[in-house]
Length: 434
Ligand code: SF4
Image (cartoon, rainbow, N blue to C red; front, side, top):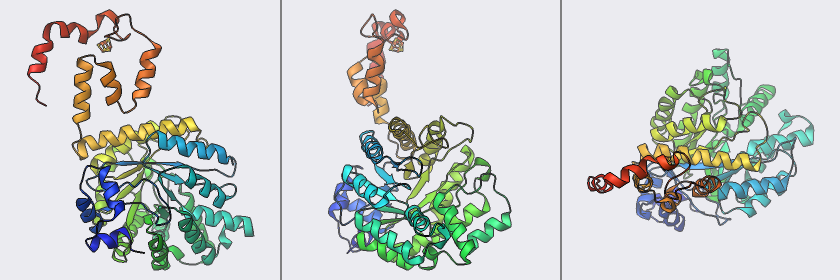
């Protein structure tokens, strides 16, 4: 199996590159060059057909939605509905993160329900299986762990968050630091730290990194280096433990690329607004511009119920400075398993954030300019088609019909635009370039 990065380094344009390039207004050849340099990845699985997207430098910021059962709520039908809703709401990728029920069956059902590339966190299933078998996550064996990686790849997973960067050094740094306001919030990360301490062993995903890479390479899967020690509170942002793991992940990203695997690094988490630029630049610099996948980041810890907004603010800032894939956050974050409606709200908030970031990062502003003109000219149908969520805009307007069809009920007959257009329409348009 030749991976995308191996093909790119041989100067070969693959069908996946051609297809992903179309969604990003660049040529397949340009896409190939970016992949060869390790700056772009295309989540893929040689055994599954789904829509391809590129993630990385110079490309539109992509949005990931995560779904999955928990040990408390196991409802396969609901998870499949959420996956479909996420795709319809415009998610670019999906992560299937179930921890409750028949995990193989659930994953296969979700993979069959969407046309998106699907990611996973194999540690969830590995520890869940150890609990089921031994009633103790720390009894997880290395063979069980690698078997889960292989099984998930064989099922069609296209990108995998693997916590390779947690090693003895990372734990030592955390110990020396001696505090953490938010503790460890990564499920995979906290269980791996527990396993290492209980067994007195190095992380097999770090120690046998080449084995991880070989499994993923067999299926052309992207290895996304998990951020197990990410800050889970803004007061832990950029602490030494997190930076230690990031440093190791950046080293591993380079090693994995040299071994012919597509590589991506994951980031926080929770970050105050003024730490985001540094975080993105640090990852980009230390990994030679490997794609960066951020989870939010949430910019305050006190917005429960509105964490999708807290995260959208952080995502826009992260995208602006170069983050390539943002994981949505839903209004249920920190509170409960998200509902279908939460998923839709989360995807939409993240898409707004990605666009806001891309307006600066990629100078993508023409749609906003066209919307300004459509608003000025009170062209409502054009406004609906230019809006990110035209259906929502149309629905709100339809619920409050104005007396004058040209305006809206906000100002009614005192519509400023309608008023000014009678006097200045021509002169306002004359001065416009583009
Ligand atoms: S009524 Fe007010 S808010 Fe509505 S289109 Fe006119 S100026 Fe804009």
